[in-house]
Structures are given as structure tokens and as C-alpha cells.
Length: 318
Image (cartoon, rainbow, N blue to C red):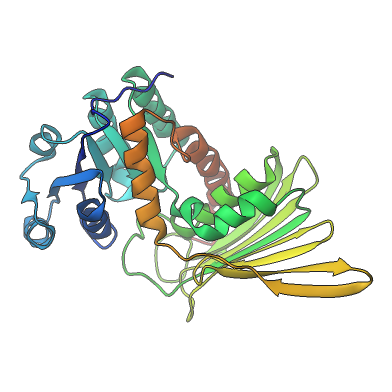
């Protein structure tokens, strides 16, 4: 697909944010800081919230999406997941480049429609799988060669927000996206279980993926934990890597000259969301394909939906 850019490479990209809740607020903050971006305005159905954020970051609180889009070349869509497709498709059809927060949407038909709209109108569609921009993932992309077994643990306290979808689409999808990109092999089978605790969807989920190349990955996700954890362990011939996405740290263990050796992995800490938005702006300026485009996001969504289907089929959620 040929992407278009309406931006002179020496200009700043005019940006806006639709939905300025807990996460959308940070999109606005970072657009206001990025050298190649100009934060024009925000929109939220909570007009008071929109005015507060607009005042905080020196932009306009728009009364409608239609008014905002007239002033912007690129937008972040940070609405509830159930509204992603309905919000994004008209924006793509109007020629606007989009960063849509993860997950892409709630079903594959919507995903196909969003991808088709982006392609038909030559627009960038980037999806907010922010862990792909974590320095931990940057290290893994360079050093994971032939993983045989992977474990992913992602735990958090109950958020009291974002529970329009289950924990699989809310949190596990981060790790699904990372692992799918690292293993680079078709998924052969999926086994999953989950239960609802404090919401109408699953709040705890466990899944095991078997890949065609023989790799096995276990995912353990909870949003009713007393602690926060975002760790990934990769076992491959010659040793293993233990990585912490939250602390942006890790260590590796390997065997050498008959001895087991271990060392910390040096990582330069960054703000992944800032790196993600900077990458989005660069894609708009230079008509590049995003690191996490609609196709990459659809792959993770497809696996997450099958996990969700299996959980629901067991009757352990409402």
C-alpha cells in the first residue's frame, strides 16, 4: 500500500487526541512535548475534562470530532475499545492518519474494516501496542533466536476503568503481541481458562500457545492482583533471558566452559509511550509503515479473541 503524507517534512504534524481519560491525557502531554508535533486540540464526551486537559497542555477543547479533524493531520483514538471501529473508520475515510490504542477493536470484522479503510484512503493506521517500544523489547528483538519455551506474567490491581473488555483484551494482548513477533511461527493450538471476579468479563486468564515450530508459551494475566508485574522469560538453546518490562531491566543466564554464568542486561530506560508517539509522527512525516500496523495488531487480536472465546465457553464469566 502506498501511504500518503500531507505534511512537508520540514513542518510539524498537527495532532489531536480523542478521549483524554487516564491514558489519553498522556497522549496529549507527549504530543505537546514532541519536537515534530503540534498539539492542536482534544475532544472528550466529558467536556469539563476536555477543557482541563486543553488548558493544561495549551491547546483547544473541541466540541466535536468533526471540528477537531478539520484542524489535524493525525489523531490518537483513546476511546473505550468498543468504540474504536466506529470512531476510527470515518476518520480514516476523511484522510486522517491514526494511532488507535490497543486492542485494535473487539472483533475481526471490525479489524478488517479498519485496515481496509486505511488502505483505501492511503492513511497510516498504527495501533498502540506500547510494549513494542519498550527498551526490553528492543533487546529481545536482537537476542531472541530460537525460543523453545516462554512464560509471560502480567499482573495489576483492579483498575476501575477499561473493563469494557476482559483482561485478555485489556492486558494479556500486550504479551501476545510481543511473543508472536518474537516466535514468528503460526500458532498451532491454544488452551485457555479464565474467571470473572470483580467484573462481568474475565479478570484472571491463563493461556498456553503451541507454535508450529515447537515453541510453547504460557501466559498468566490478572487485574485483581495485590501487586504489579510485567515479566517475560525466554528459554532457548544456550541459556535463558529474564526480562522486566516495568523496571526496564533483565538478566541472562548461560553455560560457558562447564560453568553457569549470569549477568545483568544494560538497558537505557525510556518512556515507551513517548517512543511510540514519536514513531507515529515519523511515519506520518515520511510515509513509513508503522512497526505495529493494522496487520500486526489483527494477529494479536485474533489470538486474544480465541482465548476469550474459550474462556466464555467454559461458563466461568457472566
